[in-house]
Length: 253
Image (cartoon, rainbow, N blue to C red; front, side, top):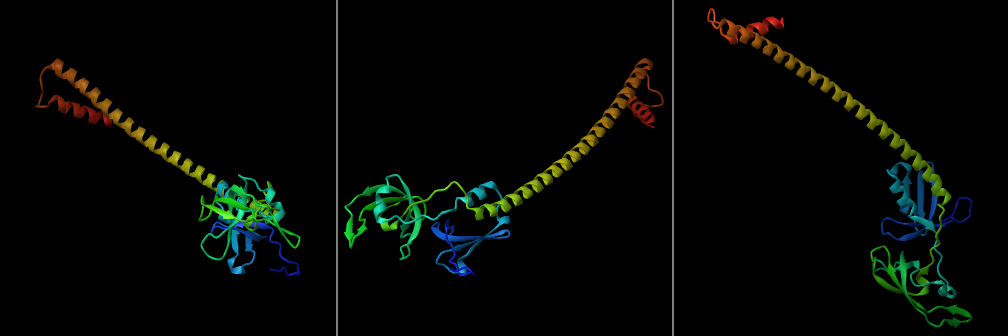
């Protein structure tokens, strides 16, 4: 792929593609709130776009960052001595049984060293590396690889500047979204508390009314009980209960 100024595009990063979990050489560009990932050797229809609004949590951002790293250069024949057991490398894998070789991370489980050969003065490594795949469709399986399928992972503690600029936008939007969510939650809590206080007041008022009515009836009943006891008779066929009701009604108005 060529840039408009005639200089070759720089596929200087690797991206772990979600579709097949394999590492690809990529070119990253950022335009506004969109980051585009272009795959080396593939047409634009395979481009992947990330939007700043796509991310909903810090965990998603961290996972996104882990999907990018510096290009892993292929191990040269005279460099096989730098590979040690237990080392993590990026290696070619016939993952889906086709001719295409995809690249996955693997642990070097063992190394079968052989004497190197020379053809026309060029050194050729014929050693065998036993690998255990760390991800992909053959995760945990063992496989043998020659040096031509081994790449050295160039770890870095710094995030690529293009990705960093995109992440600044992502974090800004995430903070705004978090503030809006917090504000809405506080408003809902405030409204809920206000409603609870109103119901509580109404409930207490009802209790007070019932308590007042009960006290009125009790007072009237006590007065009638005394009157009925002292007089010992009922006049005009009026019972003590009738008197209680009459006294209560008269005291209510």
